[in-house]
Image (cartoon, rainbow, N blue to C red; front, side):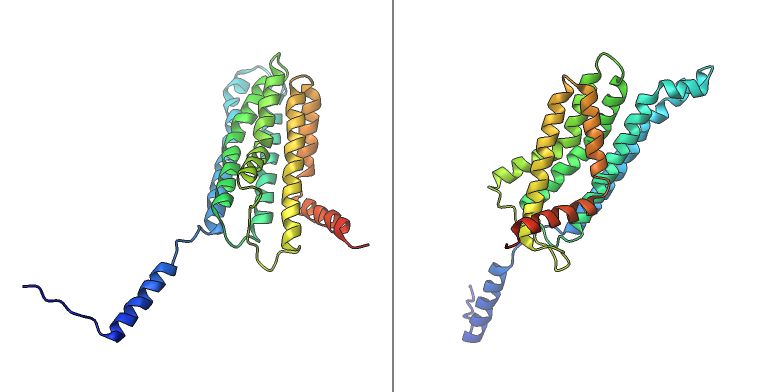
Amino acid sequence: MHLWVVPTTEVQELLLVGKEIYVEKKFEHISPKIIGSLSDGVFAIAITLLGLDVVGLVPEISQSEDVNSAIIENWPTFFAYILGFVVLFSTWYRYHAVGQYITSTNTWLVWQQGMDLAWVALMPFGVSILAHNLDTPQEKWGVFYFGICLFGNYWTTLILLAIARFDFLVSFDSRLPVPLKLMGRITLLATLLGATVGLCLVIAALAFDKVAIVGYGIYVAANLSPVRTLNGFSRILASIQAPR
């Protein structure tokens, strides 16, 4: 025998309210703090891996008759390490200079950050191939592939922006020192500029590798202070948009 219980009017109303609450609730995107924690770990590992080539020179240098001469002879490895460290640390600096104002995420932002970290993880490869091919007949390829690792994040960001039809909404908190629309223009302009400069330098590396290395150095030097760069972009765009 089955016993059927018909809910009272009050119970039915409570059930309907509960159903509406259940329907309205949705899974939220992950917190920006989670991405920040992952990024710190990836950057730390990548920076540590940069030193492996340098440490690997110790047996060779120690067995040479003149340690100092051996160190000088291996200058490409030390040069590439310094360049790679400055690239990764300044990238981490820029990453958090902007990220400190982000309050929420979305699918596009999560994947864009993931692609950035993929290039960060690949930087030790770029540094290693540059170190092993500097001052050799294959120098242009070392410079070429290092440039790919250096500017790749700009290209993947543009691809994601194009897929999202440039509707890449990001939420910032009230501490953001510029209007939201201006921040969007700053981000797009910086991405386009980095992608264009990177493409030109990487192509130039195949014919003028020394010129490309100098270009890389100028780019790296220009990104040592991302906060100053952001403020500079803000002033320039604000002055252009200011009514006359």
